[in-house]
Length: 118
Image (tube, rainbow, N blue to C red; front, side, top):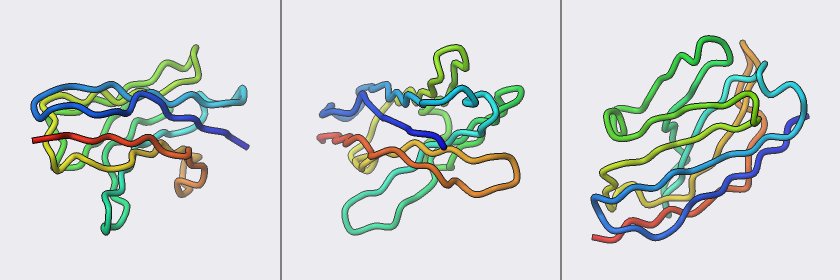
């Protein structure tokens, strides 16, 4: 079982930056693929970015490509989301999640609020 705790959310002006962190419990963090998702008010949760357990292969939603960067530090059992050039439409609760290879994202954090003012 994996427990995930996000941090780093807050209020920022459009064009600003934030760095989200997700700390994972357990000794098997390096075996999990990790992802970030977000959910805006009145909208469904959507995929933001993911990073593989091996080689750090990354994928991004088109809406954040070129602005957000996902990374991981297996020694610190952590995954990060660097968010630059933030837009008001990035406002959402951001969640990190983990999945075993071949499985679904099945462990989720509690979320951290990101609010971007115009």
